[in-house]
Image (cartoon, rainbow, N blue to C red; front, top):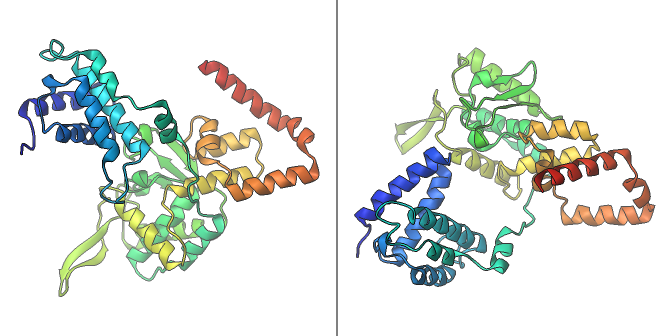
Length: 367
């Protein structure tokens, strides 16, 4: 059976170049699109894209619903199906306008990749995600050993993520010059740090308490004074590997950054398991920090600063995407409001009025 089609490969390369250079898509986005197109090609046994029609789109949609996720053994999620269909619709819309294709394809046939409104709502539904409490984070950090350079690095990684909410993809590209211990500040310069949307911003250490700030200060001091690292060396160097009597084994630290965030997630998993807790991803700590900001009862201006510290230009992103109230806390708050009968006081609070005004202005600006 054919594993590829030469003509298809050529036009796919053009499409990926278009997405990258004209649309500014990153490599992760391109991988999602490539996977979606490959699913379709497999279903058509790699037939030439010039032969595409609505019947192929409808047949593919039916097969996709029946496919099983190889990792979970369960049917593909509604979100996966929706994103696959969306990627294919955009691809064939673009393809229908290209030389040698526009005379062969019907632009409207790409619309048959659409999913039902019901499935689209399900795919976009938000679900409660586990978020570690501040107490759990401090417990994990205090449980982590620091007898070697590797262990000390691993503990410092967890500490910095708690202090700053830095994304794991950005963390692996940080250099020593990006952290200022005296100012307790992390400079996420998109020219050198792999930040989301290539955004440059500064993060001052969040007031999380515990030993996190001291751990980071000791780690930076150890790198500079004991290991003689300079400004352009990695803040969290990868593990050096050597061949030992039992095969490959860890041998201290190398002066190189990790190429991806996989090792950071592995460090988190091992740390949570060793602390006797369920695994939480590095990214979930950002929600821990967002909820801490809400619990502190900050003013609107102070919460705006808190939001910017997480790298959010829009404060509502922090509220809507990171500051969700878990069900148990929701019940506690509702019962407390009913018991104290503070509804009127809450609605007439100056801070709440200002927040409602901000939300209203933002909604009017997008209407």
